[in-house]
Length: 74
Image 1 (tube, rainbow, N blue to C red):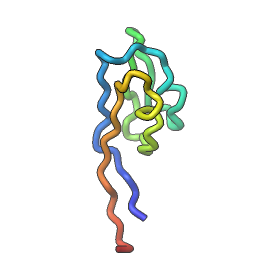
Image 2 (tube, rainbow, N blue to C red; image 1 turned 90 degrees about the vertical axis):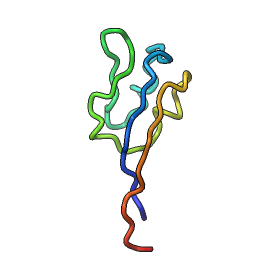
Image 3 (spheres, one colour; image 1 turned 45 degrees about the vertical axis):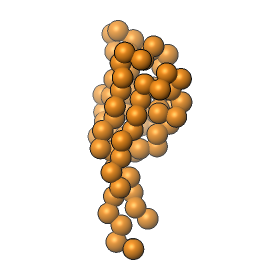
Image 4 (cartoon, rainbow, N blue to C red; image 1 turned 60 degrees about the vertical axis):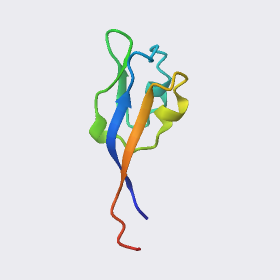
């Protein structure tokens, strides 16, 4: 089965209100709140593309853009 790979983690900091929901849901602790209480991706290389941050963000401030991985079974 093809594995998704992170292309880009798009964070609209103007829309982010700093609620921390995305930080709490991230299983790999990719996200943190900075000194302005806005979300930042501190470890994007650890992202597993679960999209929990995107799905749970009440402000639609996060978008997980993925590339499909190679799948040799097809």
